Image 1 (cartoon, rainbow, N blue to C red):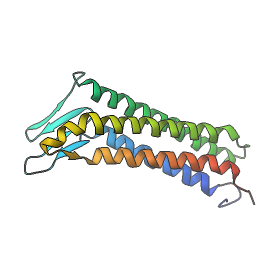
Image 2 (image 1 turned 90 degrees about the vertical axis):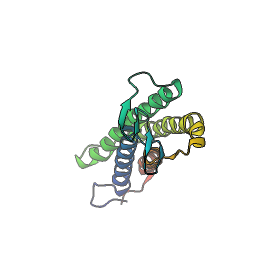
Image 3 (image 1 turned 120 degrees about the vertical axis):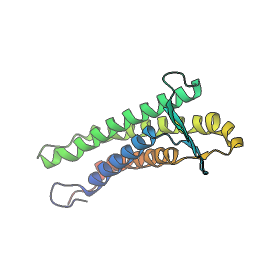
Length: 172
């Protein structure tokens, strides 16, 4: 399916989904609300710092190992999403320039996007099971940063899948 002779709608949607997913994950990665207590005095815990009503403090390399593993996998997920986005964008752009498409680009985009989702899911699972679970007894709930990373990872994977499916689209 194409919009004009050269622009593939599926490829365009794939690039947009991967870009939006990457943006959501980066926001989730950067903001300190993976777990939160929302009362008159709010407390937030994120990958890089914890916030109390008086201010925020960064871990500065002194985070627990489970938080460090979440940081590492979240960053790997972000880097893989950048690779997937780059491959999908090149795959979208080549036909616009009148160049023949490279069929393996969509496969590499899919692989990078699935790797991104896998890394994000590992970070999410470790956070939920090993970091957040013990804090639940203190009233902590899942924060918006955690949810943004989940949604971002899903959008990245869907975009990678669409990028791959575009190679099978029938041209008019």
